[in-house]
Length: 380
Length: 70
Image 1: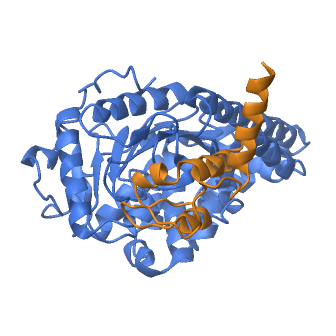
Image 2: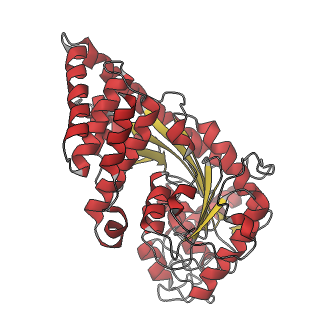
Image 3: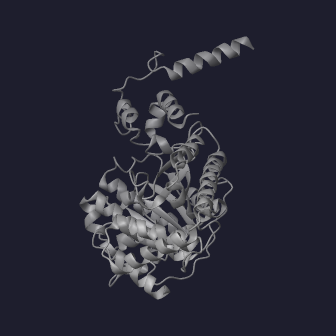
């Protein structure tokens, strides 16, 4: 797919504070005032998508590296800066209206907004040194420079939409490949820092909300079945968070030795399998004599707690999860699309609390609960 | 036909068993470009530069087959 990729469509509307427009090599750090306002609104926060009640989002990413250049963990400061410069020049050609953020000097609000939208990873955000993020003005695609690999191209879209995530990411990666010398071996594929990403460098992943299945005795066997289909299953907000908010990230495990289309099919099949098991579990939940009224009471209670209590991040995530289930099954009023951002707000804060260190300094002071409350009040 | 089957079997054996061929690099062999040692790559699953894949072609291909279960 990537080999025949067309130029990435320049469909993005002009955006205030467009950093990329300042030219090749320009270091664009924090924009005066409140730079977080220049982070484009993530597409998956504001759009609906297929199967949205169970599948929060679909993500596709490609890992690429520049040939003859040490991977970021071994690169000198000068080498990392050169990678940033070369990538900026290529991105300016491909996505001229994207917004560029240079890691040194970014303020906490901007880091937070980039992580919340999943434009950058936790790892990128807590690493010092030269790195950049380029975010398409429509909030659909982004390019992360100098994380584990030199270049990570990704698209995140709402709901269960593998084609909607794969195509733009593949096209964007293909367009960059015509401007950057990506490291590639004919017998191996694309060369990445981690052996786990070598080959296609492609991961197709789904953020799944499985609250009913998580309460079922078949939960672990359902996850094991997904893993046996060649997929990785882990908590949505890092290792060890699989039980928090019943949010699961599922993605293809294999990138080497098989076509990326086959790897994508594995992830799609496994995600579909889990979504079906979740629907069956939801059906059993509602089939109980007081199933719907119990769910309505739980969702109302969760909403009240979110509005009225100073919850820990983990507890907030659990409340958002219950409220989202209630909205998804029609047991209480609410906008299912908005719950994606609430999950991200509570999840990122939960991760920061658990992680500590530099990440905590950047994320602990976030106003997540206030943001969720304000949104809930607006919707009331 | 039999010759090619035997050759394929031998090729598989030599790639899958570390140190089975005289040309297999030792774990402390270093990449000529970045200096990362083969042992470090295999232990951490992390290469140092694209050149590592050319420097340690056979052992890394064997590792890739194990990691990706193909």
